[in-house]
Image 1 (cartoon, rainbow, N blue to C red):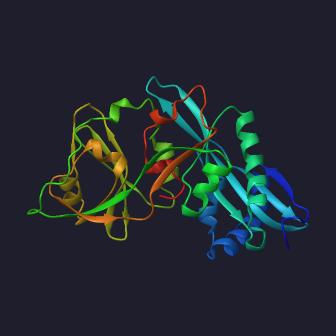
Image 2 (image 1 turned 45 degrees about the vertical axis):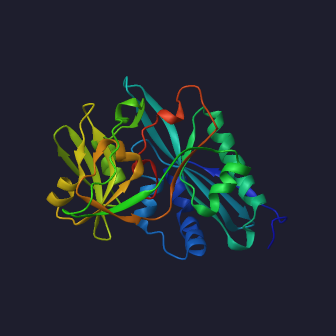
Image 3 (image 1 turned 30 degrees about the horizontal axis):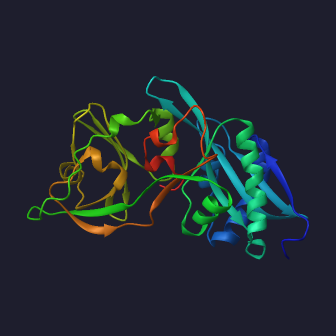
Length: 290
Protein backbone atom coordinates (compact mmCIF):
# COMPACT_ATOMS: atom_id res chain seq x y z
CA UNK A 1 0.00 0.00 0.00
CA UNK A 2 1.42 3.45 -0.88
CA UNK A 3 0.41 7.07 -0.53
CA UNK A 4 -0.88 7.31 -4.12
CA UNK A 5 -3.72 4.88 -3.47
CA UNK A 6 -7.22 6.27 -2.92
CA UNK A 7 -7.70 7.91 0.48
CA UNK A 8 -10.94 9.39 1.76
CA UNK A 9 -10.97 11.63 4.84
CA UNK A 10 -14.23 11.94 6.73
CA UNK A 11 -15.24 14.04 9.72
CA UNK A 12 -17.11 12.31 12.53
CA UNK A 13 -19.07 14.19 15.21
CA UNK A 14 -21.71 13.27 17.77
CA UNK A 15 -21.87 10.56 20.39
CA UNK A 16 -23.45 7.76 18.36
CA UNK A 17 -21.29 8.40 15.30
CA UNK A 18 -18.18 8.27 17.49
CA UNK A 19 -19.34 5.05 19.12
CA UNK A 20 -19.75 3.53 15.66
CA UNK A 21 -16.08 4.37 15.00
CA UNK A 22 -14.75 3.13 18.34
CA UNK A 23 -13.46 -0.31 17.26
CA UNK A 24 -11.71 1.11 14.19
CA UNK A 25 -9.95 3.75 16.32
CA UNK A 26 -8.90 1.21 18.94
CA UNK A 27 -7.59 -1.12 16.22
CA UNK A 28 -5.54 1.63 14.57
CA UNK A 29 -4.18 2.73 17.96
CA UNK A 30 -3.00 -0.83 18.67
CA UNK A 31 -1.25 -1.09 15.29
CA UNK A 32 0.41 2.32 15.54
CA UNK A 33 1.43 2.41 19.22
CA UNK A 34 1.62 -1.31 20.01
CA UNK A 35 -0.70 -1.09 23.01
CA UNK A 36 -4.40 -1.11 23.77
CA UNK A 37 -6.56 1.99 23.99
CA UNK A 38 -8.86 0.90 26.82
CA UNK A 39 -12.59 1.53 26.80
CA UNK A 40 -12.09 3.87 29.77
CA UNK A 41 -9.42 5.89 27.95
CA UNK A 42 -11.47 5.97 24.74
CA UNK A 43 -14.47 7.33 26.63
CA UNK A 44 -12.29 9.96 28.31
CA UNK A 45 -10.83 11.32 25.07
CA UNK A 46 -13.88 11.08 22.82
CA UNK A 47 -17.04 11.40 24.89
CA UNK A 48 -16.48 12.79 28.37
CA UNK A 49 -15.07 16.31 28.00
CA UNK A 50 -17.35 18.69 29.93
CA UNK A 51 -17.42 20.93 26.84
CA UNK A 52 -18.77 18.35 24.41
CA UNK A 53 -17.78 15.26 22.45
CA UNK A 54 -14.67 15.25 20.31
CA UNK A 55 -14.53 15.88 16.59
CA UNK A 56 -12.58 13.19 14.74
CA UNK A 57 -11.01 13.09 11.29
CA UNK A 58 -10.32 9.63 9.92
CA UNK A 59 -8.82 8.54 6.62
CA UNK A 60 -9.89 5.32 4.93
CA UNK A 61 -8.44 3.39 2.02
CA UNK A 62 -11.36 1.25 0.98
CA UNK A 63 -12.72 -0.22 4.21
CA UNK A 64 -9.40 0.11 6.06
CA UNK A 65 -8.79 2.96 8.49
CA UNK A 66 -5.28 4.34 7.86
CA UNK A 67 -5.09 7.68 9.68
CA UNK A 68 -6.77 9.60 12.51
CA UNK A 69 -6.68 12.94 14.25
CA UNK A 70 -8.95 14.12 17.06
CA UNK A 71 -10.00 17.48 18.49
CA UNK A 72 -11.17 17.67 22.12
CA UNK A 73 -13.26 20.79 22.87
CA UNK A 74 -11.71 22.90 25.63
CA UNK A 75 -12.13 26.35 27.19
CA UNK A 76 -9.97 29.10 28.57
CA UNK A 77 -11.24 31.77 30.92
CA UNK A 78 -9.86 35.31 30.94
CA UNK A 79 -8.99 37.36 33.98
CA UNK A 80 -12.29 39.21 33.37
CA UNK A 81 -14.27 35.95 33.37
CA UNK A 82 -14.78 35.75 29.59
CA UNK A 83 -14.66 32.21 28.15
CA UNK A 84 -12.84 31.27 24.97
CA UNK A 85 -13.29 27.98 23.11
CA UNK A 86 -10.38 26.10 21.58
CA UNK A 87 -9.43 22.54 20.63
CA UNK A 88 -6.86 20.19 22.10
CA UNK A 89 -5.22 18.17 19.34
CA UNK A 90 -5.00 14.49 20.21
CA UNK A 91 -3.99 11.10 18.78
CA UNK A 92 -2.44 11.81 15.39
CA UNK A 93 -2.07 8.24 14.09
CA UNK A 94 -1.04 6.98 10.65
CA UNK A 95 -0.76 3.34 9.57
CA UNK A 96 2.92 2.37 9.27
CA UNK A 97 2.70 1.51 5.56
CA UNK A 98 1.12 4.92 4.82
CA UNK A 99 3.28 7.00 7.13
CA UNK A 100 4.57 9.80 4.94
CA UNK A 101 4.29 13.58 4.80
CA UNK A 102 1.63 13.46 2.07
CA UNK A 103 -0.88 11.58 4.23
CA UNK A 104 0.09 13.55 7.34
CA UNK A 105 -0.38 16.92 5.65
CA UNK A 106 -3.64 15.98 3.95
CA UNK A 107 -5.09 14.88 7.29
CA UNK A 108 -3.88 17.99 9.09
CA UNK A 109 -5.11 20.31 6.31
CA UNK A 110 -8.63 19.00 6.92
CA UNK A 111 -8.28 19.62 10.65
CA UNK A 112 -6.86 23.11 10.11
CA UNK A 113 -9.70 24.11 7.81
CA UNK A 114 -12.26 22.99 10.39
CA UNK A 115 -10.52 24.94 13.17
CA UNK A 116 -10.15 28.13 11.14
CA UNK A 117 -13.78 28.07 9.98
CA UNK A 118 -14.73 28.25 13.65
CA UNK A 119 -12.28 31.11 14.32
CA UNK A 120 -10.65 29.31 17.22
CA UNK A 121 -7.23 27.71 17.71
CA UNK A 122 -5.78 24.24 18.03
CA UNK A 123 -3.26 23.42 20.78
CA UNK A 124 -0.82 20.50 20.94
CA UNK A 125 2.40 19.34 22.59
CA UNK A 126 4.20 17.54 19.71
CA UNK A 127 6.72 14.83 20.53
CA UNK A 128 10.26 14.76 19.13
CA UNK A 129 9.16 13.06 15.89
CA UNK A 130 6.23 15.33 15.07
CA UNK A 131 7.61 18.66 16.32
CA UNK A 132 9.50 19.72 13.19
CA UNK A 133 6.69 18.73 10.78
CA UNK A 134 4.25 20.73 12.91
CA UNK A 135 6.51 23.81 12.85
CA UNK A 136 8.12 23.65 9.40
CA UNK A 137 5.48 21.92 7.27
CA UNK A 138 2.23 22.92 8.98
CA UNK A 139 3.33 26.35 10.29
CA UNK A 140 2.25 25.87 13.89
CA UNK A 141 3.70 28.38 16.36
CA UNK A 142 5.92 27.16 19.19
CA UNK A 143 4.81 29.53 21.94
CA UNK A 144 6.58 28.09 24.96
CA UNK A 145 9.07 25.31 25.68
CA UNK A 146 10.14 24.00 29.06
CA UNK A 147 11.60 20.95 30.78
CA UNK A 148 10.35 18.99 33.77
CA UNK A 149 13.00 18.67 36.49
CA UNK A 150 13.17 16.13 39.27
CA UNK A 151 14.40 17.12 42.73
CA UNK A 152 14.92 15.21 45.98
CA UNK A 153 14.57 16.54 49.49
CA UNK A 154 17.98 17.33 50.98
CA UNK A 155 18.43 19.38 54.15
CA UNK A 156 22.15 19.89 53.69
CA UNK A 157 22.17 20.75 49.96
CA UNK A 158 23.08 24.12 48.57
CA UNK A 159 20.08 26.35 47.89
CA UNK A 160 18.47 25.74 44.53
CA UNK A 161 18.29 28.64 42.10
CA UNK A 162 15.48 31.02 42.97
CA UNK A 163 13.28 32.87 40.51
CA UNK A 164 12.25 36.18 42.03
CA UNK A 165 10.01 37.53 39.27
CA UNK A 166 6.36 36.72 39.97
CA UNK A 167 4.78 35.98 36.57
CA UNK A 168 1.66 34.18 37.81
CA UNK A 169 -0.37 37.36 37.57
CA UNK A 170 1.00 38.45 34.18
CA UNK A 171 -1.11 35.88 32.31
CA UNK A 172 -4.55 36.84 31.04
CA UNK A 173 -6.00 33.44 30.03
CA UNK A 174 -6.21 30.31 32.16
CA UNK A 175 -7.72 26.87 32.30
CA UNK A 176 -10.87 27.03 34.40
CA UNK A 177 -10.05 24.55 37.16
CA UNK A 178 -13.63 24.06 38.27
CA UNK A 179 -14.96 20.78 39.67
CA UNK A 180 -16.39 19.60 36.35
CA UNK A 181 -13.13 20.09 34.44
CA UNK A 182 -10.98 18.59 37.20
CA UNK A 183 -13.24 15.53 37.44
CA UNK A 184 -12.85 14.88 33.72
CA UNK A 185 -9.15 15.68 33.64
CA UNK A 186 -8.45 13.25 36.48
CA UNK A 187 -10.32 10.26 35.03
CA UNK A 188 -7.12 8.56 33.85
CA UNK A 189 -4.29 10.02 35.92
CA UNK A 190 -6.10 10.04 39.31
CA UNK A 191 -4.74 13.48 40.14
CA UNK A 192 -5.39 15.17 43.48
CA UNK A 193 -5.73 18.69 44.86
CA UNK A 194 -3.70 20.24 47.69
CA UNK A 195 -4.61 23.73 48.98
CA UNK A 196 -2.69 25.79 51.52
CA UNK A 197 -2.12 29.49 52.30
CA UNK A 198 -3.88 30.90 49.24
CA UNK A 199 -2.26 28.38 46.89
CA UNK A 200 -3.74 25.47 44.96
CA UNK A 201 -1.63 22.56 43.72
CA UNK A 202 -2.89 19.94 41.28
CA UNK A 203 -0.64 16.88 41.42
CA UNK A 204 -0.37 13.18 40.73
CA UNK A 205 1.91 10.30 41.62
CA UNK A 206 4.43 9.51 38.89
CA UNK A 207 6.57 6.44 39.56
CA UNK A 208 6.79 7.29 43.26
CA UNK A 209 7.44 11.01 42.74
CA UNK A 210 5.12 13.92 43.40
CA UNK A 211 4.44 15.52 40.00
CA UNK A 212 3.11 19.08 39.89
CA UNK A 213 0.48 19.44 37.15
CA UNK A 214 -0.76 22.93 37.91
CA UNK A 215 0.09 25.65 40.40
CA UNK A 216 -2.29 28.47 41.30
CA UNK A 217 -1.22 31.37 43.52
CA UNK A 218 -4.13 33.61 44.48
CA UNK A 219 -2.08 36.57 45.78
CA UNK A 220 0.88 38.23 44.10
CA UNK A 221 4.18 37.66 45.86
CA UNK A 222 3.34 34.38 47.62
CA UNK A 223 6.00 31.71 47.16
CA UNK A 224 5.08 28.08 47.67
CA UNK A 225 7.61 25.95 49.57
CA UNK A 226 7.85 22.81 47.45
CA UNK A 227 9.89 21.10 50.13
CA UNK A 228 7.16 21.50 52.75
CA UNK A 229 4.42 20.29 50.40
CA UNK A 230 6.45 17.33 49.16
CA UNK A 231 7.29 16.27 52.69
CA UNK A 232 3.73 16.75 54.01
CA UNK A 233 2.33 14.56 51.21
CA UNK A 234 4.79 11.78 52.06
CA UNK A 235 7.15 12.05 49.08
CA UNK A 236 10.93 12.29 48.94
CA UNK A 237 11.17 13.42 45.31
CA UNK A 238 9.21 15.87 43.20
CA UNK A 239 8.88 16.61 39.47
CA UNK A 240 8.54 20.34 38.72
CA UNK A 241 7.79 21.83 35.30
CA UNK A 242 10.12 24.73 34.64
CA UNK A 243 7.14 26.97 33.81
CA UNK A 244 6.13 27.00 37.50
CA UNK A 245 9.50 28.05 38.92
CA UNK A 246 8.56 31.73 39.37
CA UNK A 247 5.78 30.73 41.80
CA UNK A 248 7.85 28.34 43.89
CA UNK A 249 10.37 28.35 46.73
CA UNK A 250 12.93 25.68 45.79
CA UNK A 251 15.00 25.80 48.98
CA UNK A 252 15.81 22.42 50.48
CA UNK A 253 15.73 20.62 47.13
CA UNK A 254 18.58 18.95 45.27
CA UNK A 255 18.37 18.62 41.49
CA UNK A 256 18.49 15.09 40.05
CA UNK A 257 17.88 15.83 36.36
CA UNK A 258 15.16 16.14 33.75
CA UNK A 259 12.15 13.85 33.36
CA UNK A 260 10.79 12.95 29.92
CA UNK A 261 11.08 15.20 26.87
CA UNK A 262 10.84 19.01 26.63
CA UNK A 263 7.25 20.24 26.67
CA UNK A 264 6.60 22.31 23.54
CA UNK A 265 3.35 24.25 23.65
CA UNK A 266 2.39 24.77 20.00
CA UNK A 267 -0.68 26.41 18.48
CA UNK A 268 -2.39 26.82 15.12
CA UNK A 269 -3.00 29.23 13.50
CA UNK A 270 0.10 31.26 14.32
CA UNK A 271 -2.00 34.05 15.83
CA UNK A 272 -5.62 34.91 16.54
CA UNK A 273 -7.33 38.17 17.45
CA UNK A 274 -8.98 37.42 20.78
CA UNK A 275 -6.13 35.63 22.57
CA UNK A 276 -2.44 36.50 22.76
CA UNK A 277 -0.89 33.04 22.99
CA UNK A 278 1.98 34.09 25.26
CA UNK A 279 -0.57 35.23 27.82
CA UNK A 280 -2.02 31.73 28.25
CA UNK A 281 -0.87 30.45 31.62
CA UNK A 282 1.17 27.24 31.13
CA UNK A 283 -0.04 24.03 32.74
CA UNK A 284 0.53 20.34 32.26
CA UNK A 285 -3.27 20.08 32.28
CA UNK A 286 -3.32 21.77 28.87
CA UNK A 287 -1.85 18.54 27.44
CA UNK A 288 -3.72 15.34 26.61
CA UNK A 289 -0.94 13.28 28.18
CA UNK A 290 -0.32 14.18 31.82
